[in-house]
Image (tube, rainbow, N blue to C red):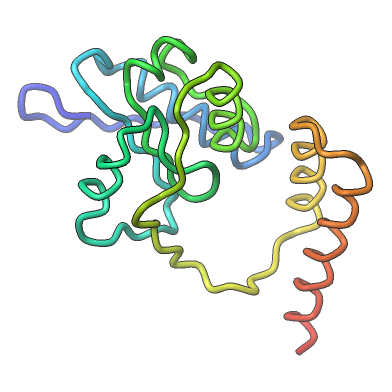
Length: 167
C-alpha cells in the first residue's frame, strides 16, 4: 500500500492449518481493508507464479464484463461489482476465483474468459501433495461437482503427478 509517497509493509501471520488458497485470501482481505476501494474502477488479483503479457489489462478491459477470467491464475473485477456482491472482500474459500465467477454468474453479472490470458510460469507436470488434491476435491464437491466426477478428476491428477515423479 502506498500512502503519501510511503510504501506500507503489511504482514499477516499465516495459520498453517488452513489451505494455501484461504491463507492468501485472508492476507488479501487484510490489505484490501486498508484501501479505499471506491477510489478504484477495477481490481486485478494475480497469482504469484503468473506473468502478464504486454497489453494484458488493456485487451481484457475491452471485454466490458463485470469479471474477466473465470478461474485460474488471475481475475479482473469491476470494483463496484466486487463491493456490491462481496462487500469488498474475497470469499474465504480455497478456490475463491472459481467461487467469484460462479457467484457473479448466478446473480446475472457478466463473466467472460480472458481475451489475452495470463502466462503461467510454473512448469506443467509439477507435483502437488496429497493434501492439495484432497482439498481440491472437497472444494469441487462444494461447488456442486458430483462425487464420481471429483474422484475421476483427482484420479487423473494424481496419476499425472505420479507419472512425472517416476519418469
